[in-house]
Amino acid sequence: MTALDIVIFGGSGDLCLRKLMPAFYFLKQQGKLPENSRILALSRGRISQNDFRTRVLDKLKIFLGASYDETQAQAFVQGVTYMPLDIPDDSSWDGLVEYLSPVDDRDIIYYMAVPPTLFGTVCAQLRRTGLNPANSRLVVEKPLGENQASAEEVNEILAASFAEKQIYRIDHYLGKPAVQNILAFRFDNGLIEHKWNRDHIDNVQITVAEMVGVENRAEFLDRTGILRDMIQNHLMQILCFVAMDAPAQLTADDVRDQKVKIVQALCPVTAADIQDHVVRAQYAAGEIDGRAVPGYLEEIDGRKLAATGETFIAVKAMIANDRWRGVPFYLRTGKRLSGRFARIVIGFRSQNGGTSRVIINIQPDMTICFDHEVITGQPTGDIRIPDAYEKLLSDVIAGDQSYFVRHDEIIASWQWIDGIRAAWTDLEMHTYAAGSMGPSASDDLLAAGSNIWYED
Ligand code: BG6
Image 1 (cartoon, rainbow, N blue to C red):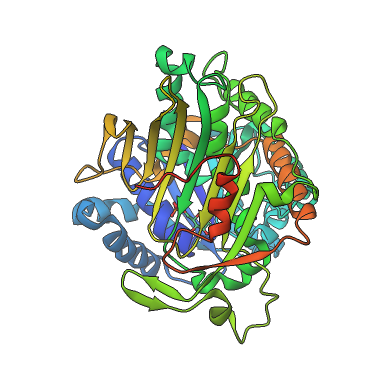
Image 2: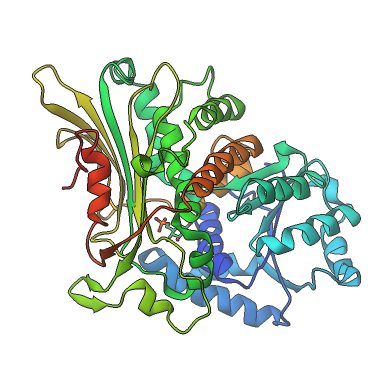
């Protein structure tokens, strides 16, 4: 394996300590990190090497749980280096240049664990210092824009320093093993794939339910709302995997070409039909796990927020292609719902007028069931399911972009989302009790098509 340097901007932040370090720890255990690889964490603070390593070790103890092994963890942190970096300050980059030189005798992975407002400066500095050779890769994560125009700006910023084949846009749902299994389930299984179309499928439901509220992210969530926080990325990715045609080959671009075709085939939602396609809502006070919780407006009371962010959304999406014309794809996601789960339900038309279903559980269990019979996977018990970051980072190391989002897909998805937002100016903001599965209007959305949400 080629030698590898992993360089993390925002190296002392929560994402790095909570997700990236544990992922690299496991990859090292599995021999998926080249022997002579180095991990470099960069941040503005002035933390000593020792203090940083101790901090990583403490977090590993917490986040690895039963998988924590003192000897292995000690060995791992010895391979982690901390370096202070003040991103806008040119002279501050000398140390990094020296550390990485010569840049072309190893692979370099840059991870942007910093807010998107810093992407431009980091990319410009990497270009200025010549630290962006062809053997380097850049990993970025949402939010990648807040609408089509800003997403295009982000793409331009990245493209000014890196070629598309060097850019890995993470959507952590694509790293969930159960999401990755959708493609294998469909395309390795002739019988299923043969029936995977409008002649046999009546409707598709995708639900990502959360029990948490807005917590300390009220400012962000009130501004973006859950349409942009969850549907534009995670639920759209699941939708693409369910709906896409088989790629000619399982190459990254074949897979991504098929996904883009689905996003581009989504019927735009207009002001004239928004009522029949979208339900948005905010949670009111209620009960979660037997505990009384306040409503959204009470939670954000006292902060200077517009209070316009939806915490629940249900969307009926239609795909204008031969395979899916006329089949509703119902997408639903929300905070403070009655459970935490992600699930796809494929409703098949059956001969005798009833319905049979394939249920793909994404989390917490990872099973695929046909009318309640488990046909593959197992309830997530004592086996360790690799975290999404571990899966995705191992793909970045291997140079495989299949499960990363290409620039044209990002733009196409924003186009559809922007259309919804432009159309919904007069759409009612419903409320729902915390601990329920959303407002009754979400049931009405399906009732209009003689459907009901599948609930366990
Ligand atoms: C993030 C969203 O991308 O995904 C959060 O910003 C959400 O609002 C989270 O809570 C859900 O991810 P998971 O993996 O916990 O289902």
